[in-house]
Image (tube, rainbow over all chains, first blue to last red; front, top):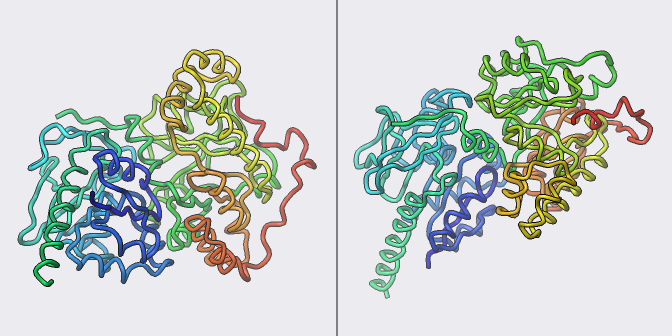
Length: 202
Length: 295
């Protein structure tokens, strides 16, 4: 069984926890850098990205998160988590973890009164996924080798760049577990290949 | 493709994203920026903070839309604003401005002493205060997407917020453990909608996020409320009435996230200057107790 960490500083931590456990993986709360060592993948949940970034800095977690992002282990960012993962943010001159080769726009569907639900058809995941968008960002541009998995009215809302999965909406708020299952598969594959590499070394 | 705005999931979900965070009262753009920079998850745009509402007296109303607009333009985090209990027009005005969350609040002078807003009719989500599960469930029944304890606002005294969160949680635990055939009588006793109790019974918790509010004056107060099971905290008069708001705001944010890290709370609590003086609740007359407003 794979162990998946959930960055537990602020936001929809409990929902991701429940979703991970519902599909048979083990969820681990990550608040300190030590907790990053023992996990096979990491979810960065939805919340407020500016607040989450502050909390990362207050705990001096950023170097450890960036090291984790280079370890080959999968990372999944939803909403605020996508903003933290992206390597470019429109109208801002700084990035956060900056690992995923996508450019994102914050609050790109408007304020809370414009937040919405829609059923989306997602590549590799299936049709009719209930996507809940809350003051959501979207992916404006993707780099080479980034696979677009979902779009809404021409805007990219789900994409995969190697071990990174980024999502504008909140699969953890829906009862549909297909996206989290997709991520758990990414983590299982990565764990297998890391173990295979270790065996080769030995 | 079916697209829906203002659904229960979208409105309740917005509050889920605020969990573990601090929502700060601000009265202008400058304070809003300080709050955002300190790590607030949202700001509450007000004309006066509760302690000033207390000392000013008279009728407290929705803030000047100019102030709300100024705050909305200043920050990228969500902006909340308060309306008087039952004031449909204030609520529609704030909704039309695109405010992210409305607090139907006992801090303002009620516009209706019998009825609250039917919050399910709005696209914008609402937060409401509660002192016990009956109130909490009635507000959820009306469509509130988030709750907060009432506490006793603007006093700098945590005692009422503690009382309210303990009461609500004790009652939630009781309902969660009840047999289904006991729920209707419990609904009658609490004055709570049966459907909301069914949902609590099924989930084993409140169906919406519940923050602490009303009297949080120090980082340790914020951590105490988290320890008692609050999902996050509202800090009203405390921050911008303190000597060093930047430092104070950051200290509250850190203590809320790391509420069981007592060494850290000790560290961030150093040299914060003089906190709000605080009031003895028992010295407040009945009509000065804001928590009594709401029905």
